[in-house]
Amino acid sequence: MDTALQNHAETAHSETSRAKRLKAATTETHDRLDKRIMAGQPFASVANYGRFLAVQHQFHRDIDALYDNAALSALLPDLADRRRFGQIGQDMKDLALDLPQPDEDPRFVADAVDDAVDLATALGWLYVAEGSNLGAAFLFKIAKALGLDENHGARHLAGHPDGRAQHWRSFTGALDGVTLDAAEEARVVDGANAAFRRVHALVEQQYG
Ligand code: HEM
Image (cartoon, rainbow, N blue to C red; front, side, top):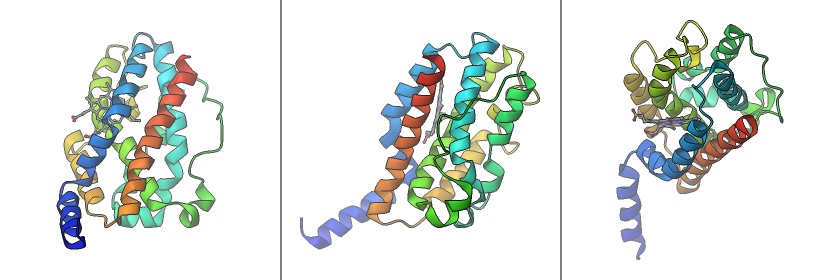
């Protein structure tokens, strides 16, 4: 393909939303994760749900430092409000569960994060964390059958006061507005897939 045509093709490609492309690029890892989680029957009992909370706790511990990152906050203006690590800890406390023993250092580390974080990779991880709150509408409903809600045990699954869909659209709108080159674009996808794989590995650990 000559360069002009190739540029044209790349422009056309970049006109579809980044969030939609991420969804397409991670559908398979998301499906495998959903199936794996549901196979562990996380809502069959509070004990099973506790394992799901332990997964969420470790995943959000991995990314928690990103919510303090100034460069990311400049790209995603309400980033600090989207943090859920504290809510997950509170959910575990509500249910008198011990916090999980970390299996390794967090993926993103607080004091090094501003200098060392690769923004593109971080955007991929944050896409997964935010998207999981959209999908959590269904999980929140079944959590209610266990007597859990936004004030007790399922705080981190609750929707945003603006509504889940609106909250998600404001995230994807900001994500879509970030200018990235092709290499960075690829690292967003790699980051998202790495996040899904990380959660999958945590599910394997918890539900064995
Ligand atoms: C059994 C567990 C899960 C189920 C049943 C589930 C289900 C769903 C559903 C139905 C949606 C689409 C929501 C909508 O479009 O209104 C969704 C979206 C999403 N979920 Fe899950 N999910 C589960 C777990 C997870 C986990 C653990 C993660 C990541 C840690 C995750 C990440 C995502 C992402 C990133 C999206 C957004 C996809 C997009 O529209 O770009 N999900 N999920």
